[in-house]
Image (cartoon, rainbow, N blue to C red; front, side):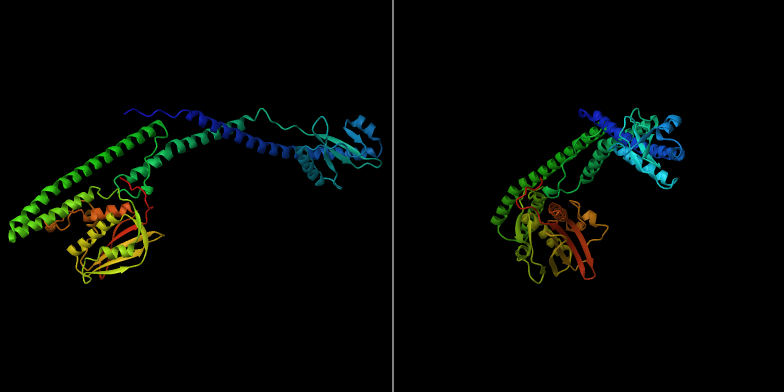
Length: 437
């Protein structure tokens, strides 16, 4: 079988993701580094600016501002408030420098962001005559080239992020879908709306090849199951005609003990044939219909003697496959009559959320041992081998379990001191939905 072609553009997609994460990480790290450098710069500027302010204020008592600027080299401005900048970075630095100066000087000097050719701050000096402002330059932010260490960390973060995303999206998720699909192999088919589609062939080359081979295996198993069901249905169908002819011939021979025994054998053969047809999927395509379950069960059990079967039914409606469910409940009642002790009790109760139901068939027999219950659910398994010639072929519980699974439930056992019950759990299906098959 040819391997599926690899998905186009997959490497470029993860390279772009890694590049995006690297760029975002670099921008974040650059911003954090810029903040730390800015705080360090303000901390270093604080003592120097405080010293210049004290020196300038002392000199202004004896010298005019122009002479002080010429002799000391301090950039001074005389006059009212100088032009202010609206740069958020300079405003933030002005507040930080003012806090730094307030810890060193009393009174606290005003600090303003400067609107000048060079980035800087204005700090007001205490002057006896007119306002004097000292210009303090600040370093520009470093944008490019980025710090090599930060660049390396950003590239590492992008590579790790792209690798983790690749492993999750191309390996882990397809394997999880494959695991879920593998868990369903061999289980009875549930309602059509609950069936999972086959896993898509996605992921790395090895994962796609594994998924393709798994889907091919499931198709082979389904084909073998269909062939087996077709064979069983064909055998059972072909037996109907000779059974009918034999019954007609026995009717023409008259009565007698041997005729009655032959009639009983034909009845058993017909029951076995009906079970084969049902197990082969005779009711799988039945569409669900809504009906009152309590009235339907009462009608189903009407032919039985009320002394043999007692009813305990809670009124409720559900959308079910009536023919298949009737055969399943009939099999449970037949098993209880054959292997248990009367009187039987048929119980109907709601189960869990809205639409759930449970049908319990109680008898007073010893029941089925817990160790033998999994075997009892297998087709063609008879726990009582002495009943093999009485029309029992070991399909009753297997058919009931299949019908329960088709209704989104299962078959369970329940024990009490007063008796033993087989419980069929299910839920209401979607009206008119196409069943699996």
